[in-house]
Length: 372
Image 1 (cartoon, rainbow, N blue to C red):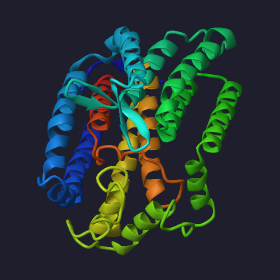
Image 2: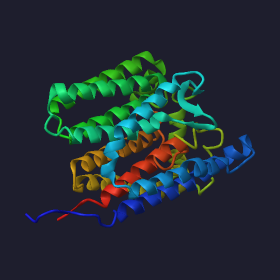
Image 3: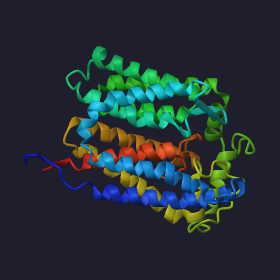
Image 4: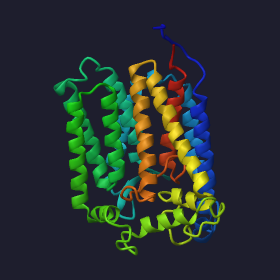
């Protein structure tokens, strides 16, 4: 076997290319999806695009640039304080003077004139902490008392802070991503089985004690025609938008569903608007780009020069795939409808900034992968 050499080299340009395609496509579709809402509700047709660029894209790209040039090994030193700060912010959400309620959910934190979602930041912060912690516990990773119990305790603390926000989909992503880094670190399959059983129990209890989640499950499991003016309305409108797009689409800006029919057109439902306007061929191309980006992420993880990079990149890859799949799957009626934003396309500053930060880390890791 040839000897492996670890040294800094050019980043993964294929990952960067796929990333740019998603970013540009997202801005184009956000412009189209938000134009009507901005004009009629805010008398500012480009309000949402400007907001996304100023409060999401700009700070996110700055963070991406810094992290892509900051040796990712040094992130181990700040993993604990970053996690502590985000957990503190999650606690602040529970306080009326800081937490902001939209609809029936209190997921946003307002400090001064800035409003953001700490639940988005905890996805990356928790992965960063677990990757640093588990990479230092290689001799103990199979220990029940020294690793498994603390892992479950940490996961429980984070979960208890997310549960009051009534954001089950985010909780599933956080737990599943945490499972993935634990598995990549070398956790025994038996422990992974315990964790999977625990996740199943959490989901079952969440559905039982929140009736609307059970209703969504019924819509998915039986028929999308169940209460099409009520709980089944969103998925029916999404499917209608996707089907009406046909092979070539209605043309950019010509979606009919986004005008007073399809809920959450600029966030959760932007994939449906994309399919209606661009059609099957271009939408399928975007889905392929998502798969391609995921492939490059996992390749970076596989070729990482150390355990920390391998665990962290793998965890980010699972997170990216899960969030993308949950959003698209919900719009297509393949899984129960949830409120998960589509990475790099949905409106939302917090989600965009955190994903840009994650990709900055991936670019940095890709510059230090193994060369055989």
